[in-house]
Image 1: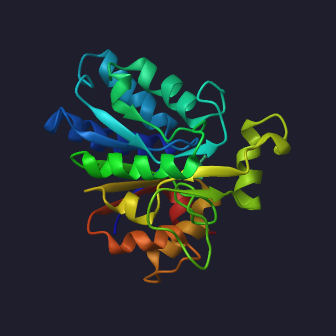
Image 2: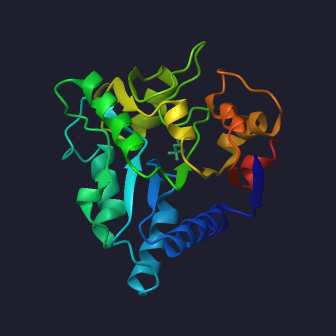
Amino acid sequence: MKFIVCKNYDEVMTEAAAIVAGVVREKPDCILGLATGSTPLGMYDRLVAEYEAGKLDFSRVSSFNLDEYYPISPDNDQSYRYFMNTNLFNRINIDKANTRVPNGSAADPEQECKDYEAAIDASAGVDIQVLGIGQNGHIAFNEPEDKLYAYTHLTGLTENTIKANSRFFENESDVPRQALTMGMASIMKARKIILLATGAAKCEAVKELLSDRITTAVPASLLKLHPDVTVICDEAAYNCN
Ligand code: PGA
């Protein structure tokens, strides 16, 4: 696991966008692994700016997203499909037919998970996976537990995550209680992973990444088993005060 420590949020986003843009330039038909959450927003803005400046072409790019609430309609403005469309896909020239987000309105969620994992396997493989990290060390909806799951699965949200995500909903009771999420192995199928962490609230989670422990109590710590992971963080997330 490699660490790049930047001064602040903006520098983390600039660094992350440069890495992703580099992959797109080098491999115009690359497959991006994308994440929602507030952290990557600045990276998406920078990729959009490069596209608008005529410096990036997404016409042959495809993507897989990490997760989606369940149940939720893709049109719901809190769905991760809606988030990706408004923050990235609608603003660049990617073919939306080539973007995948688990379907939060699938009638059979277990089958949707199987199909999603099969689609990842049938693809040429994710070239670069972008990850955020929860304050509790979760990645996607792989929450701290005695047992983690390898592949895309239906899971319950922890109280911690429901609280953290309730800021986007009118009431905490509106936050869906379940999600469809890539598992640890699905994420680690990516050839390269960048994990973005900013702000003091993430420093305990980053501290675990800096240690040599691997524990299901901090799902992101399992990324130490992957040969090409770069954590890009700001000083606040890197140094716990
Ligand atoms: P955040 O979420 O980017 O909104 O902090 C990250 C996560 O929970 O994975």
